[in-house]
Image 1 (tube, rainbow, N blue to C red):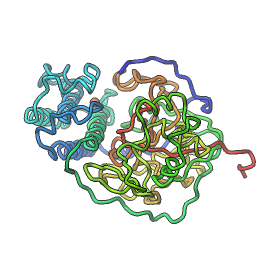
Image 2: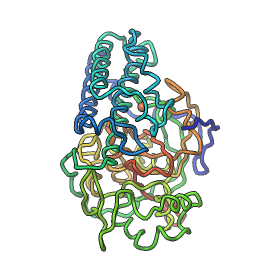
Image 3: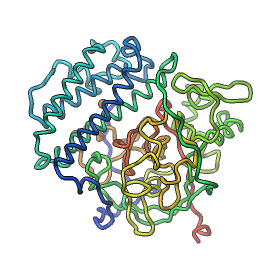
Image 4: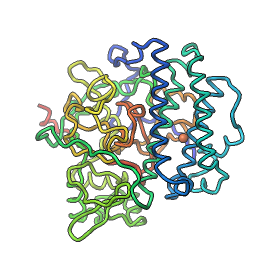
Length: 469
Ligand SMILES: [Fe+2]
């Protein structure tokens, strides 16, 4: 990936008005935790996260671990040792001030040194060595966690560096889940199905009032640099889909020749559609009149009421144009998700300030597919928008830029080198995203051609003056 530098340029429908007001920021759970409770919370998050990494790497044999299942992905054994290497660099060496375990492998596991396609050719640690290494790092980290002061240094304030490493591992767990989806062969992962729809009939769209709201955060303890600082953004009134676009809706677009008419596609989108010969979401195949999909090694009929997944941003845009609509901007998405009209405050999550539970959202690889729309009425936002968190990442029309007042922390390569017009922002997390790596303010970014990620979308439109009641 090529680092690029761009000035912060708020998009056409996003007018910046200055710093967020602390009176409208949300309550944060760590404020109630004492230092020992915070250490226990961190240890539990580290444990829980490692269990998932182990599940994703122990469920395949050694051949599968070292193989590259797609040129888009690293071998799983690279992800595993890279997780340990980042943990060593930040928590053992920097936070802990301890002697390195292995400096000889830093270069191998530096994501900026080697693109994914080249990683299988590197002299990587084998499965046994990699497991031994991540275990040794973890032992040292748990010792550091017991002893290091969780104050006095920005990196350790509220255990931020530990939270960053938990999120990093969880992000790689989602990447490894995407590798599992690309892997050929018999199924090795299983999970119970998601809950059924229970919300009752929902309106097709929701009006989000125009005006200012607080975007981003200055107080969320484990928020990453690109989510900061909180700032006031003006958004014009708009309508947004109550739920993400479903497979049923998307099939209508296909049946109506959506992939055949350049008029629905941007110039770049049509060029990619032609070059990659796109005709349906990735992993879909046609059998007579019906569509089938491949999901973690199983072939099954496409469920009509689930959000569509494995579409790129260009496909999302084409669908929206065909439907007479557009993708929401990132600011619109966040206002729909966080703005509480009763208080004027922005919440941590659509449902409030409490951390996600299984009643709120389909997160954490608990189910290995999106839930049907209407399955999470308890997770709706105050305005009545459903399933913003979990199920599928949602493409927005916004490029990835720093917020006004952005400061790179703890290093430029975390976000800043990706700012620019190459990437589109995705919001809300997917069924493959852990709650620790998903917030109302969390920003993901990727190339608009990406389809192997667990991404779908919802659409929006401007509100007309006569619709504002
Ligand atoms: Fe990484």
